[in-house]
Length: 144
Image (cartoon, rainbow, N blue to C red; front, side):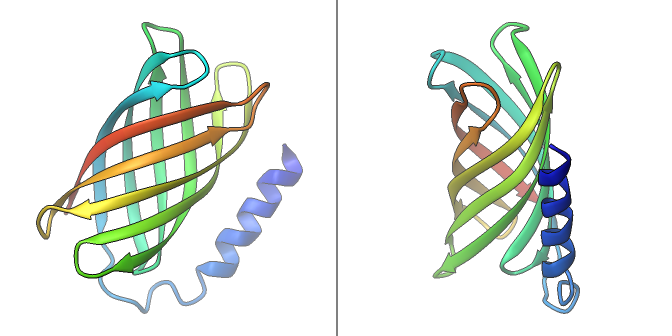
């Protein structure tokens, strides 16, 4: 895990060199509801992020599975590619920490802007710990 954390920190440092030159730099927050595929359990998440550039964000999250089945904290880099004014795809590379374990999380997602300040997103995350778990969510976010 220490090696993965080092790689993550190096990647964050490498991409942040010109991060403060692109506008707009915005903070966003949201909530999502979904399902863990392997267990067929519901899950919900709260997330907050910051757009470092138009193509890269850093995001923190809190995820809860089922009725007190488990929680996880995460931090991820989200590189993205915008298509038109309202639609974008993004990737996810990060780390998560659960009650007894921590490991990598990777994923893909899509965002659709409903307005300048609100939008919807569809997200897939794969948690690499143990046998692995796939989380699929639909969420709403707000920019401020």
